[in-house]
Length: 125
Image (cartoon, rainbow, N blue to C red; front, side):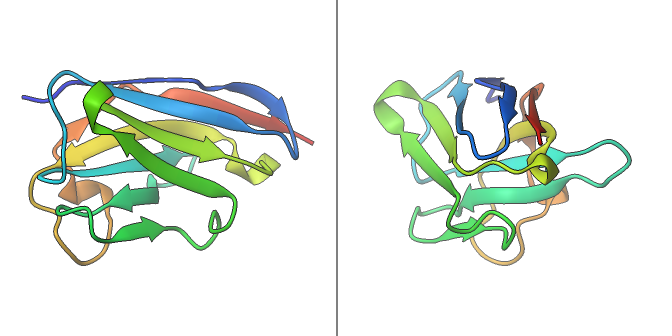
């Protein structure tokens, strides 16, 4: 069973940057779909960015395209989310997730089996 631990969250002013990290307990490669989700108070958990199984395709939510970049370092078993030009509406708890079966289709939280505990990102105006 894969265990995931996020880090890198914090408080930043609008326009700033943060890099989130997600350390996996075992080797991760293209056999897993890896992704980032976020949930703001009173809102549903939404997908932010993800790699599909196979690594050939990447998903970004429209709201983060051009600002966020997902990347993966297989040697370090770590997934990253570089977040630039942050906005107050990016404020949320950010979660890392993994699954062996997401090869295509919509990136939704109910399709991912393994989850981290989350890291808080707060963007002030």
